[in-house]
Length: 199
Image (cartoon, rainbow, N blue to C red; front, side, top):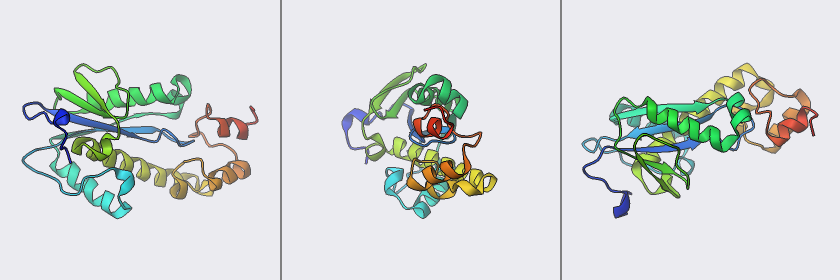
């Protein structure tokens, strides 16, 4: 998949970074940073959104076993409300890169913006479909956040978090209207403000 010459760094330690959870009304924005081991290739890496849940789970296990290093970063709902979702995402990406136990020499970030990092970095539009390291990061972040939504679902079963994963779906709007706002909801997001009677 990493066919574009601009994304191939044979002599550098490269990390891929991606996020999950900018759009939901509840929970953390979760990011992952992954450094793959060129000696232990992983087949089937792709944008996590294009994979089945079963395939994501299998790849999650393989990535965590074979990667040279991986780390999770996050920003919680309070930080999202204080900073806004873009700046909170950049903070979460910084935390993911800082959490790696192997220091990358270059970082490839999915999207069109890079957080400030101690090493060189490059934004790659649609990188989760173009660069193996970013695909791996998207899978780690997606599986991690989905599992956290299942935990939240057990704590607040009426809201249906395991089904909609916190995204602004019709079901989520209905549950907000019926049951109100949980402590994990992002109070700066318009539908949550509406549920709180602030709009």
